[in-house]
Amino acid sequence: MTTRQARAIEVRGLEKSYGTLKVLRGVDFGVEKGSIFALLGSNGAGKTTVVRILSTLLKADAGTAGGNGFDVATQAADVRESISLTGQFAAVDEILSGRENLVLVAKLRHLKQPGKIADELLERFSLTDAAARKASTYSGGMRRRLDIAMSLIGNPAVIFLDEPTTGLDPQARVEVWQAVKELAGRGTTVLLTTQYLEEAEQLADRIAILHEGRIIVNGTLAELKRHLPPAKVEYVEKQPTLEDVFFAIVGDGRKSGAVRTEK
Ligand SMILES: Nc1ncnc2c1ncn2[C@@H]1O[C@H](COP(=O)(O)OP(=O)(O)O)[C@@H](O)[C@H]1O
Ligand SMILES: [Mg+2]
Image (cartoon, rainbow, N blue to C red; front, top):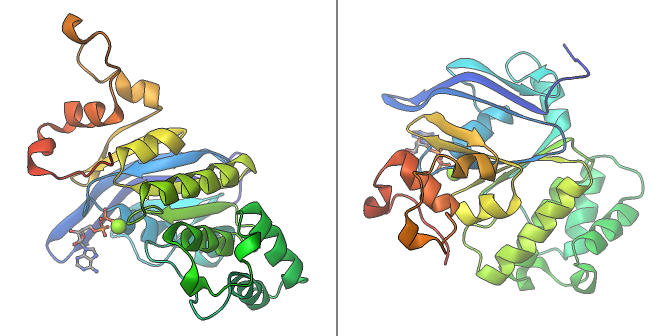
């Protein structure tokens, strides 16, 4: 059932196992329309599993998931129409130019004026100068921006970005961050997953940490920082980072190297 007040994403009591491996053990969160939500977790925490369930590619064992008033289990087609998924590995066709990639997707979606749509997106993501070049000649950041641009064709209300900057160098990462901020500025709801605490800190209105199958904390950056123990007087100059919050909550993961951070 569609309701006007429905949140863009709603997840309640989500559970999922692969064989005997219990990946999700009761995941709850909601995402307000037009906001950027970061699902933060170590490699293997279950982030992609959540995204795959939300985008109807995978069935949950228990719980409910959906968005814009639709449920993934009973209204999969409606959910699919309102979302777009950009995976960890770019869907860009390397043999085609950037512009040809965009025109192709617009045609596949039966949209009018595919050329105009392509040109607008190239402009929006600062790819106009490289429009005629084969995507195989693009840098990692350009490719990822093209990938995000492709996923926007058809104006989905919600876009899932699964680790949008994994494997990119720092400069390319900043370029992708700009693209993501641009998206949300136009009212698209963004759910992004990341292993990078700094990325969540940079981009997200709200951050949820997925750890051992559950959301262990969910809030704004300021709220997350309140989980920290009181600062010691010797360290008055230092502001707590999200990384400090994470380890204050989950314990000594730093020693096992479970979460990577970017320097
Ligand atoms: N199809 C699958 N079959 C078996 N195990 C899987 C499958 N997909 C994921 N897993 C396991 O589930 C856990 C969570 O995976 P995933 O959701 O990809 O985590 P993340 O995206 O946070 O790195 C990992 O331990 C992974 O190896
Ligand atoms: Mg993943």
